[in-house]
Image 1 (tube, rainbow, N blue to C red):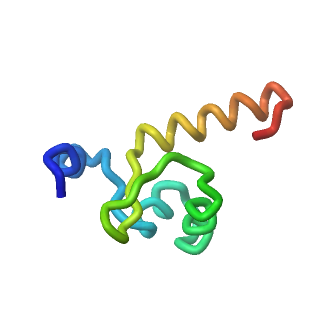
Image 2: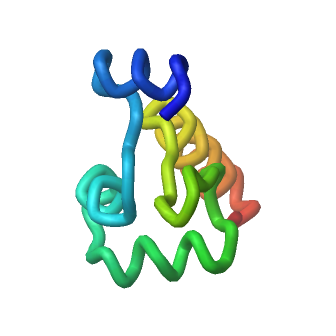
Length: 74
């Protein structure tokens, strides 16, 4: 694990694995994996483990919400 990943984990910003991402999004792990497969939100892989940052996913959700309010969907 890189130094930045270690510091992210220490602050609670890092979501390490599909289950953590699913819990943060409030969806099932299968739904989270589906979103990953569609590349619906920003993530990266640490080997075979899918990772994301809470702040980045929150910004993605906020943008989708703004687009929906404008009538642009997403």
